[in-house]
Length: 629
Ligand code: SF4
Image 1 (cartoon, rainbow, N blue to C red):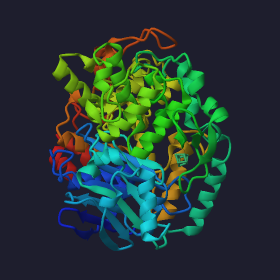
Image 2 (image 1 turned 180 degrees about the horizontal axis):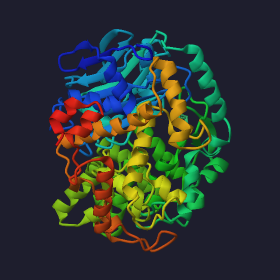
Image 3 (image 1 turned 135 degrees about the horizontal axis):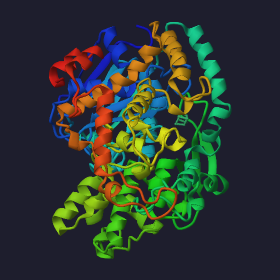
Image 4 (image 1 turned 90 degrees about the vertical axis):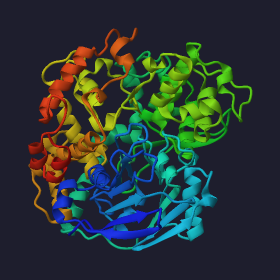
């Protein structure tokens, strides 16, 4: 096979043994790589029904088809496990040099089983696997851990995926970090922590064999050239933070824990403001000619020096949603999350939930007492100090509040409501347990069903159904019979990119249009030059449907029901009072209607289950046997 090594590595941390598995070529053609292959590996290797923090939940990594090749923005990989936040599939993407090293070590996938007795750093040195002591790395930040391992091995080509203190302390909002990039959102860091896996390091020294190197180089050159033109200008100059002012104008910028969609100080937390006052440089993932990462730098002041990349989703969560108009506090909080190993979005949304509890008088300063701050402190909306302090407390589970918020919004709210008889679930902003993204869905009715039905929970990246709403292709304030098909189409479109994986910011660089007609023929050419296969438009299109089907199948086997496709209470019951999206909610009837439309478009039953025949058609007969109806 070209483009793949044909080898999948199993690592058992309990017994400290490894073995190699081979898969038939048809399996690779069905699952390709990235989130799809990682989810399939999870399907095959998990103990169904297991506790996500138990040894029965494997960590599954699937490399990208284009990692280590000249294909621009193809240096990405997928990671999947059962999410400790949602109890369903947790599929994440990350990128950069770790995935290139893995490709050069000639592994298509890694499955990490069991749990170690002692903290461990697993080193994959081409085909040699070493279980190294990881205990001296405990407590280190993510970047310090990566650096320490390179120093220890005396090799700056070794690349490591690591957890920070948050993962060590089993925070359910912890992530996994490599090369400054994150496998984020669904709590992988806690799964690693439960296995006492501090780091997975890779040294790869082989080349990557592709079917037609000349053709691949030519195709890659053309896309690289286009990627430096107008289609990516927004990302290259301001990055995704340019969304702040756009979302504010549309009344969609989450503010004060989604109480409103307009933030009066939006200018002060905008990409433009960052660019003018704090931008130090722009950086890129490996294999990327776009370089969207805008690095913000604060040199001094109340938060000391801090430097890290700032993008929209981190920014909304750790500024407007906490009512904070101070870019320095936002940068510091984002850097804390990155270095302590926590998801910025989940952290910010969970903190904003706590701030609303404080606003309502449920929490007082005493509730914030901890080892660091024995007197406690006030945690009002707008307090950058409280926001930054809470990021540190969550990573260490410091005090009552650090421990509570480390559980994520859903569990923190349930625990509080049980302990104090409150109704904080009404402002707990999560879907399936995953904190909501930076687009208020009350007036994005297509996105509303995309989010509700998302296999991963509250994720804008997997759904992408905000696109037709925001672009004005449909009336975003109302529902109609087209929305099921639209939500299906945008979700499967996104899944193609997440499976190869290719960064979605390249999507306009094939023909100038971000649609299937423009991209799929070019992507088929890239696949064919890499693998020697003969993919066409329809084959590429099927990648997305298959990727989504295996994730949905995983969820069904874990006990998913129609009721799990929900939205936060607030979006159903509380309209916003200000701005261009004021006055709207998604009614229960609307959501149920949208779910009907969506399930029908997917070819599923009214209960949202997948017919056997559908799975067989997708090449998943074995999955059909287990969960098909
Ligand atoms: S565009 Fe940004 S996120 Fe995408 S590959 Fe490049 S640097 Fe990474």
